[in-house]
Image 1 (cartoon, rainbow, N blue to C red):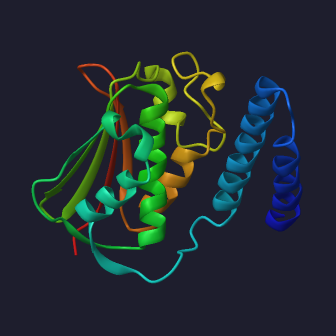
Image 2 (image 1 turned 30 degrees about the horizontal axis):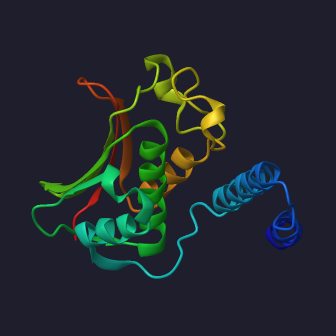
Length: 198
């Protein structure tokens, strides 16, 4: 499925580059990119529970810093709080994918995203806070389900297929951890990834 869908999407992307009207070209490219991202999320969902690579001891603060570097155009909107190394056993590829999903969510709905890496007795935590509108309380229990989005404050026009939190929840489970979601008392949304320390 991945191969059969990626090939025509790549072909469409190449053809769209030849569109002379700038607005039409940008709209076409945006649609193709959205379809490509949705395909990648669906494929990742189909593979969930299958770890990529070997589990190894990593510094979650360093992992977070590496993921933040990928968001080069939004650096001014990102804050990393990591006062000490926090080591845990992780599948690096899966872990970065989960953290990337949470950061993308925060950037989509808020202006500033703060990533906090810390430890508690027996566990490591990565907290991703945004200053957006949050999610209706009635929607919180269902956000981990595939294709579910927090409608109302987080609407479809902002993009996304409703798979990011489903995948992130699966990654947490693959590490023997959990994903906790809540609205912040001071406003905004909070996602907490927790896994056992090394």
